[in-house]
Image 1 (tube, one colour):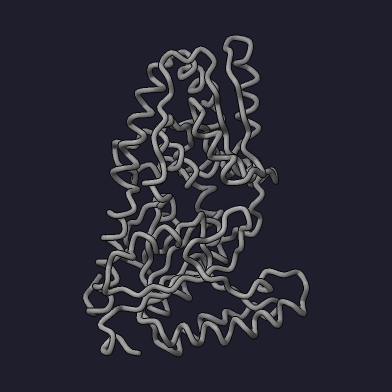
Image 2 (cartoon, helix red, strand yellow):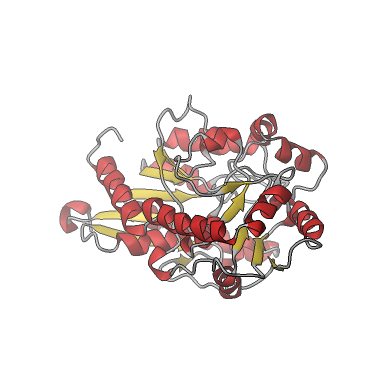
Length: 367
């Protein structure tokens, strides 16, 4: 049925539910009765099943070539049907290129159907190492010494995905930390969005100002890309002077990881890439002081009330020492963290902005 028949705008989200962001946006948008949303994701996380996303054929990421070929056949017919249904396509990440051929199947179907859309790039698929090496000395060092694990990041890939989405007429949604990769010649206008975590499910547990033995937590899915060795070195240097407990979150279930963050007195995000991620938002939502490296270029895009303590491989020990010396400060910053997340990462506020963008696209306004 068409929009003219139902009176509802049909939004299609796919193909990667990055950090459950798609789930949170679908949930927050459900209150808008003039929207009908379908969401699909490629990745199936058994420890964190999706609440609102349907799953794309699992063989798309299989190492078995026969399973993968069959999955792409199923995928082709599925996205043909869904593209035809949708009024607006809200794309996450990059295209699923057909192996060997490197053929962006979805691009050609979207081009054929002339669909209106938004693109939300999330990180590695658009990160341009050439740009980061020029503005971020810590990224440059880790990249050139082979410590940085995300080897598939490239200027070529960043340019390719931007050119294709530009040809489709898609409008970028921009997380802070992504904007300096976006080619302003292709996309003179973007729209700011913030990571969502389902804020209503996070209750603050502020660090006690009387805690004599603080718990420090560092989250690192990739230890090279997060600067974990610098964290460990700093803590090793400080343990003779301070009594503290340390937990490294790596290869844990989401539930276990969040339980440690909930109990911690300070949280360390990354020291290399130059902007904070979803894990930092979760920690701030729980009322924790967060340490993270914010590079000067990205830092210009954050608001002045960002409570994150800027720490890099050269300064991490000093920043940690100051917080270990001042438990009251940990509590005060934790409270500012919660207020910041409520102001910028609230699901309902972000849903209202996204709803307005959908309406603008359908009304052919200049968004």
